[in-house]
Amino acid sequence: MDPKAFELSMEQQFEFQRLQYEFQDLDHNQVLNQLMEAAQQLMIKDNLIRDLLKKANL
Image (tube, rainbow, N blue to C red; front, side, top):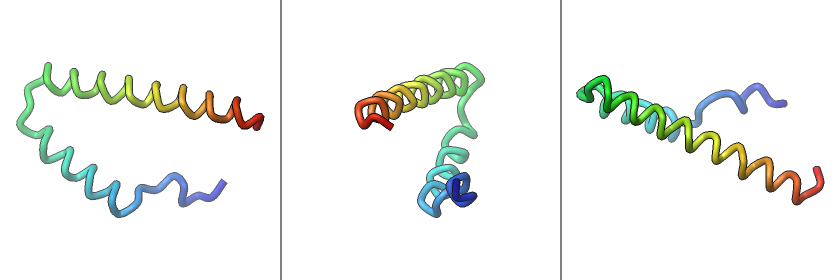
């Protein structure tokens, strides 16, 4: 696997910085809610990728 696959693109770096700035002013519970939502979205993404790979017979 290409080592660059583990690096963020310029757009992703910008989005990451934007999120850091946005989350600065959140309280603890708001940050936890955002974290749980992000974790759920990542799990759904994993499920979609797994399903697509299964359908592609890879």
